[in-house]
Image (cartoon, rainbow, N blue to C red; front, side, top):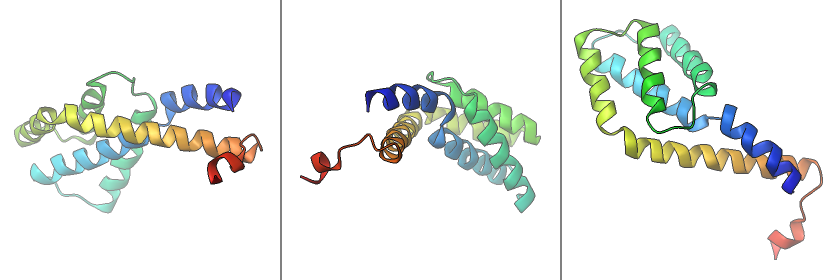
Length: 130
């Protein structure tokens, strides 16, 4: 189990940022809607793809998600004054949100580690079933 965890967890910390991607999509759509931009299915899909790609490269550092969010907003063209004001609202509550996002990322990485260990028959289920 240690071998699997030592492989899966660092890899997951680098590329498996589920919570970050979800937060980026929700925040970008909130900013777009509150700034008067029209949200279509295509714009939602583009935001989702940008957030997915950006979350893979997001460093595990406090405040990095806010910078990536600004990159997504700029890429979508959401740069009017209202969008910047809505972005500042996100910044004001960013720290508690990042704490929740981090917990979601950790749960995803731990779950992946358990799933891989089960697939490799390296987990003793008798311990967990009592």
